[in-house]
Image 1 (cartoon, rainbow, N blue to C red):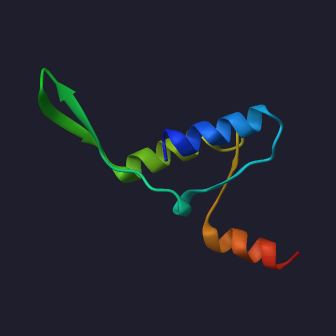
Image 2 (cartoon, helix red, strand yellow):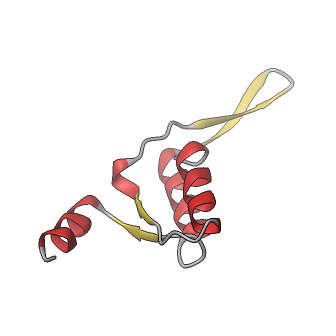
Length: 76
């Protein structure tokens, strides 16, 4: 989520596309904080998702979930 998907969303926005970032259609894993070979903490999945939403929302993408997007596409 926070690397490949976020980077792709940013690039698409930079190229002029209107981007919908479907948060619940992405996946990530906890990121350990390692200092001198020892894990001293961890950035959890929920924290990563929240950060991703904060940096993308209204700047690079519209944040949606799958159900919302399916409803919108069905209405067209």
